[in-house]
Amino acid sequence: MNYRLLVNKTNGLSKDFIPEDLVDTKSEYKDGILISEEVLNAFRKLQNDAKIFNYYFDIESGYRPYDYQEKLYNELVKEKGFNYALRSVAKPGYSEHQTGLAIDICIYKDGKSYIEHDIEELPEIKWLHSNCHKYGFILRYPKDKEEITGYMYEPWHLRYVGDIAPYIYNNDLTLEEYYKTFNL
Ligand SMILES: [Zn+2]
Image (cartoon, rainbow, N blue to C red; front, side):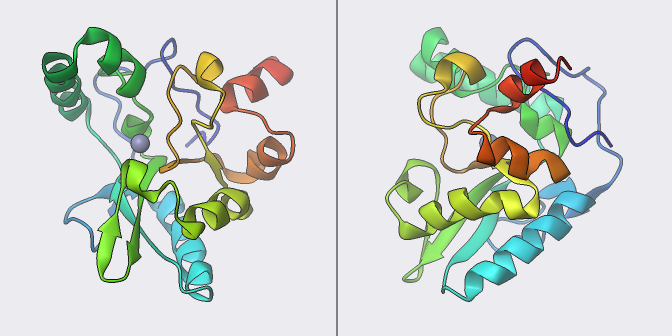
């Protein structure tokens, strides 16, 4: 598996792309969330280390098959209109979640679970953003990079990229900029 795989609005995956090493995350948030095994191993380390600070992370979304993304996208277009959908949810075949390398984080706190924009102000998220590169993850859709990534700020969406994560973090890059830097 190529952990540097670039999937965005112009680089898509075929309809039949399915990661080979999908495993069940055993997430407490929801049953049946699958991701690539290497990604799960890395996440487990992050999850365990965070407990030292009484931070409790879990996975709210992982691998999404092409058909699922198709449904999600069509529903959002119907609900919020084409322009909104385009900025916030990938078209089928253009979602990082189809790679099995992307996870959406949820946070458990005070007996509740927090997802999406509700996690934004929590101290947990600051820790996550400044430490996830040590485990091979990057914040895939940072603030003020919408023009480059094509997506609004998503503090919950992490992407596993493996050993290039510290480089991307230390140089304040997106995956798109990393590709440009190295002419990939
Ligand atoms: Zn996501």
